[in-house]
Structure formats: structure tokens, C-alpha cells
Length: 255
Image 1 (cartoon, rainbow, N blue to C red):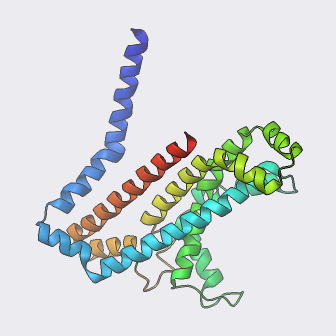
Image 2 (cartoon, rainbow, N blue to C red; image 1 turned 120 degrees about the horizontal axis):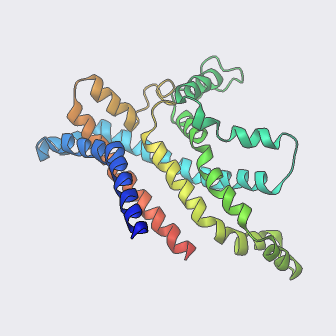
Image 3 (tube, rainbow, N blue to C red; image 1 turned 60 degrees about the vertical axis):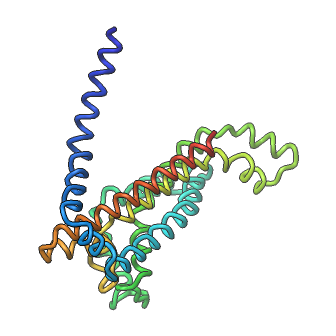
């Protein structure tokens, strides 16, 4: 009975916290977006600027999630399996995008790849710099998802496969990758969701490139809160669908 009581109290506190922090604000966005007529809502989310911004945002998010899944796994592998000078420093730097204000990332990228680039690379105000900025802020997701799983992989199974003549590539593909795949998918899903809503690292460097978060910001500045809420609702639904789909896929893979 004591355990049940404690469990009920814990569930109540957790749900209260979730409601205040997540559910009520999301409900407010839904109410604001749906308080207009269906025709106004449809027009808000299907005009040419919004569709262009959605295409760029979702395309960049998918590309960043794919690149992050591959390179994040490589970085996690190096940090877990290899020893080299400065490893602890590199391991600490992985979390820097979490701690660093994203506007600082945008300012740094503008200095590196803007008109006065010391490397002669000018990609500011293009779609390419959007991908670079998003790769920076989403670096930790896959790395930190894969690292603990990689630490728990049984090395004896790998040694047994090697003793039976399996190459390194075959061992990784047939033994290690199936264990890592759910963590990779989970990290990629988080990276995708972060990309969809990112604005801080992009506001200084996108120029005239339209992305969804900038369009929402512009709608608020133009005193069009319902249009901003409409696009926000679309992003919430799309992100939720992707997150649920990837989590279910990861569960099936793990099973």
C-alpha cells in the first residue's frame, strides 16, 4: 500500500510538472491556431512563403539528422574505443553546443564563413550555412545517445567473431550496429526535432533564406499571432509524427 501511495504521488507530481511546462503551453498554441476560421488557417499554412520555409526547414532537418547519425556514431566510436592525447578535452567539448548560447554559434559562423571569412569561404546567407549551423547545435544528440550503449557492448562477442574469421566491417555490421541502431535512431530523432525549431544560431546568418522559425518570428513582429500559431501548430504536429515514428522504428529494431 505504501508503494502504491508513493507511486500515485509521483505520477501526480510528474503530470503536474509536465502540464505546467509542456502541455498547457502546447494547448495554448492549439487554441490560438484554431481560433480562426478553417479558411484562414489553411491560407496561413499554405501560402508560398510558408511552404518554401517548410520545405527548406524540413529538408535541412532531414539532411542534418542523417549526417549527424553517421558522424555522431563515428565520434562516439572514437571516444569509446580509441585513446589519444586530449581525449578528455574533446569529450567535454561535445557538450559545448548545449551550454553555449546559440546566438554565439551564429556569430562565430558569420565570422568564419561571412564576407570577411579568413578562409575565403563565403557561404553566409545561403542554405549551406543553415546546415552547418544545425550540425553544430545537434552534435551532442547522437554522440551522447550512442556512447553509453557502445560502452555496454560485449567485447567478447567481437573477439569471438574475429576468431572465426570475420572482418572488422562484418563484425561491426552484424554484431555492433544492431545494438547501436536504436540509440542512433533516438539521437537522430532528437536532432531532427531540434533543427525544426532552431532560431538562435540562424537568425544572424540566414539572410533572405526563409526557414520556419524565422517566418514565425516575422509573423509575431508583424502583429499576426494567429498566422504564427498556425505554422507553429504544423511544426509541432510534424515533429511529433517524426518522433513517434522513429521511436516505434527503434523499438522494433531493438526487439
